[in-house]
Amino acid sequence: MSTLFGLSAAAVYTFFSHNLHEQLNKELLNLAQTAGPSLKLVKTSGAAGLQPHWSDKLPWHHAIKREEGIEWFNAEGKLLAKYGTIFSRLPLAKYSFPVDLKVYSSVPSQENDRRKPTIEPLQKKLHREQGPPVIEQQGQIRTLTVAVYTNNPKKQTLQLEGYIRVSESTKEVDSILVQFQFGLGMGGIIFLMVSSFSGVYLSQIGLESIQQSFVRLKQFSADASHELRNPLTAIATTVELMQSHSEQLDPSSAKKLAIISSATDRLSRLVEDLLFLIRSDATVANVEFAGSVISLDKLLKVLVEQFQLEAQNREIDFQVHLASGISVKGDAHQLSRLFSNLLENAFKYTEKGGRVSLLLNKQNRFAVVRVEDSGIGIPQEYLPFVFQRFWRSDKAQSQQKDGLGLGLAIAQTIAHRHQGEIKVTSQLGVGSSFQVCLPLAYSPTTLVG
Image (cartoon, rainbow, N blue to C red; front, top):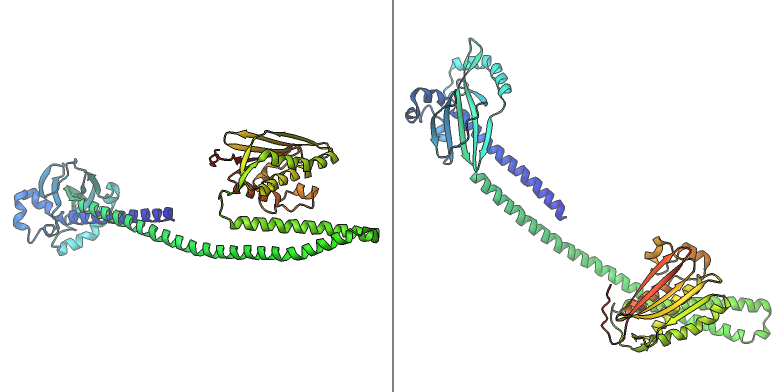
């Protein structure tokens, strides 16, 4: 908006300045044309012959302003007389617009009226040959020079009598332009201020509406999740009870119960994930946990024991390198969930005979955990989206249909709530590496790039 206003202001200023200067040029031309007939008097009587004829034969005398001046020159360019207060020091410009003494006479006669139609075509021709009036600028003085001719109707020619040069100070024009610039500047500032305040006000109104809608949506999601918990718990309990008496079930019924149990577990996990994200959104971002000091290497060892059996069953090389004595401050359950999600993804997308690595070490004031795999990898163009909720790549969906797309979003949320960050690097067909940086216990929590 400021750019548009600036361009508009520049266009308005240019137009106003051009019109103002054109008006000044017209005033100078009118003064020169009015003073044209006096050249003959100056040539015969000199400067002293002007004053006695001011009242009747010199109409330019009444038109001249305080900061203007008129100069009379003969055909050779010699200065004959001058009148006024402002004069140019520039050499005389001798090629000028012709002014006919008879045409611009102060008291036109019938003879002049008869001559004008016969001389005018020749005069226009001479005008085309010599061009428009010569306008020059020297400092704050503008000058306009015209040539004065007399006509000879018998020979159909114009005879050069001399030149009239008028000068005027441009101080008034410059002052008007400065004031106009100031007005445009102040108007622009006021316009931008009003626009800014209006934009902020309208943005706040729109933002409040969006926030209210978001709050209602979160509340609805929370209520729906809570309402789903009870029937899911009832279904899961009933299925477990029926499976505990499997000897009374035929194989077909037992298989159906297993399907129901799997679907119930999946729905329960979805509800828990949604509730966790809703609670996280309601919590002020980047607020440090008032949790306890957690031995990170011990927490990861528990997870290693849980995934060791899966690694053996799938013949995956599970490499573990955990530095000891590394502690962080936070919530042990949430941190366990963070690294469990990363390990689940690593094993889920790694083929039989592949490799999964869990590494823990200390870098400066941070504990750094890496989960690496030799799985399917993630295309580079998809990396910015991996932490978005419910997002899964096409290849991941085709290989694992039971995923929800919330695991990495939850992992990032937990890392941020612990004043940490999570990064990913991946190469399609080679594998992925997730790195989690968490502040060490009792150390400053400002992340450094």
